[in-house]
Image (cartoon, rainbow, N blue to C red):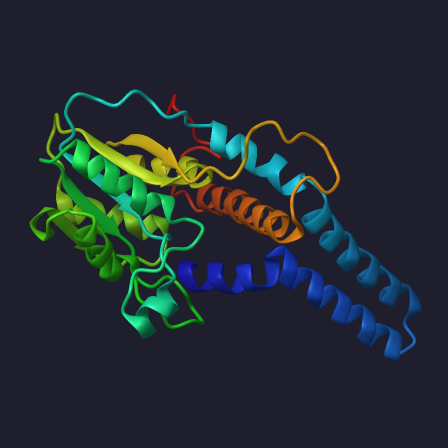
Length: 265
């Protein structure tokens, strides 16, 4: 139920959809001569679009998430690497059978690099099809094609293809791997996603070293107008809103122990 509620809520809550719905509500109100309601809906909708597309508000919301877990020195020995899904174009790969990467593709590229650096490490790819509305191939189904092409042998891969969200990534990976005391596992995911992911893996009893990748901010954006192209700014705002809402929802549901998890626990 949590999964379905979160997907429906996010459909209405993401900035671009919310702005469109508010503008449509304003137009509908204008047709019924509800001038105050029409003005309110239109102004708020336009404000969301302007802030998302033309300002640095998205980057400023993303940056604290990305800075929360600095990348640590690599350990001398790594027993395994867990990479979370979200790096492939699932619908395209399902149709074409390739391994097209999206803006989160750094997760898979970094995993291939780590796999070459630690040739004895097992590689867990965690990610099924997490979309409620779109049909696509899960990352755990696509990853063997890409990683194999990059020289990672199939016998090193452990594929977790049932998870639909980060909570299930952690729980299903823990059950599949059954990590032993003293083992060293790296957790690879986008830097903005690491606070939520690390907290969920800790809660599931899967001890990992966070290895953040796929940074979206330089940390030097500051308050500004038109600091990036509008499409990237909207994407940054959307990602930031989703992560902060996700942290709040997971804390409220008891799935994580802190609102803003950090290295201290």
